[in-house]
Structures are given as C-alpha cells and as structure tokens.
Image 1: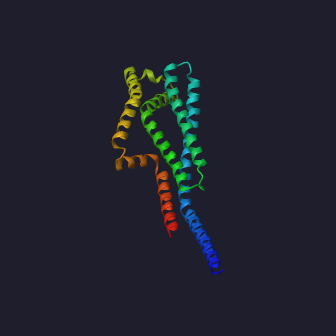
Image 2 (image 1 turned 45 degrees about the horizontal axis):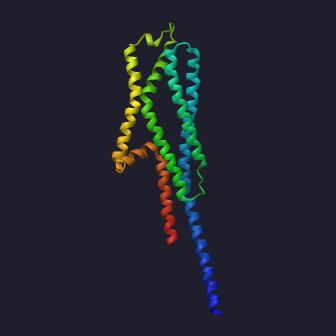
Image 3 (image 1 turned 135 degrees about the vertical axis):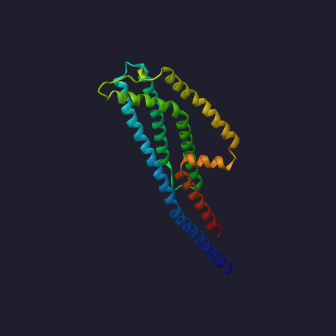
Length: 230
C-alpha cells in the first residue's frame, strides 16, 4: 500500500509540474508574442499603402492612356508604368495575405517559417524594384512631363522638346540594366552569402519589423527552453 501511495503522489507531482510548465510557457507567450505581432501588423500597414499607391497610379496613368491612345510614343511609357504598378499591386496583396495567414497560436518554428517566407518576399520585391527603377522612372518622367506641358496655356509634345537619341539611350539603359543588375546581384549572393555584412544588408532590405519580430520569437523560444529545463 505504501508503494502504491508513493506512486500516486509521484504522479500528482508530475501532473502539477507539467501544469506549471504549461502555465509558465503560456505566460512567456503572452509576454513576448504581442510585440512581435504588433511589428508585423505595422508591416501590413505598409503593404496596404503600397496597394493604395498602385491603384491610384493605375487610375491616373490609365486616364492618361485613354487621352493619348492614338500616340504610341506616349502609350508605350505609360504601359510600362502600368505594368510595373500591376506587378507591385499583386505582390503587395500576396504579402498582405501572408501576414493575415500567420497563425500566432502555432509553434515558434511555424511562425518563424512564415516570417522567413515574408522576409524573402520583401527582399525579392526590393530587388526587382531596384532593377526596374531606371526604366520605370524614366517612363514616369516622360508621362509626368507630358501631363505638365498639357497644363500650360500652349500645350506642347514632350518628345518634340528632347533629343530622340537621349530618349533611346535611356530606354536602352533601363532595359539592359535589368539583366546586368540581376547578374551582379546573383554574383554577390553566391560570393558573399556566408558573410555577416551581406546578411545584415538583406536584413535591412527586408525591413526592421520582420527582423525584430524574429528576434523576439527567438527570445521567446530561448526563455521557453529554460523554463522547460527547469
């Protein structure tokens, strides 16, 4: 009987210990998780702003195309701007959906996996924005200057005011910059991917919100491990 009583007492102690560990883990979750969730929530706000910016761009440039649809030399740069806005819009919506799909009640590994996917998406988005910036910005310049000239008392055609060789050179540079820049980035990624400074650059590009949230989750995992060991 004494042995059975000792076994029952030992079982009750095990159950109390397990309950205590679960309670401490939940306390850690409630302490560390809200700041990480708040940071990702602020990141979602930026994606919403990107979506609004893209929609506004499509409306304005679409109106410009409607007014100049017979002028191919103006429709072409406007089409480039609209294409870039559509791609950025789709990517921003995708990131917004990913943020909404993060299950904050899941394990640390699952949450960190979702944040890593979001980080990669932000890095890729920044990369393609930089690669396409010369071409898209020049097209924006052409469309914007034409819009301004049409607001003057005597409207002018922008391409009549600039050297056609300069226009062609800018288009060529913008197009060639994409594959050349992509090759350079690929070389740097292969050459320096193990270097700390390269990882810091990627962290900066992906945004401080994602990185700080990941650090907070790592802190949570570390504290949870210490509690479990105790």
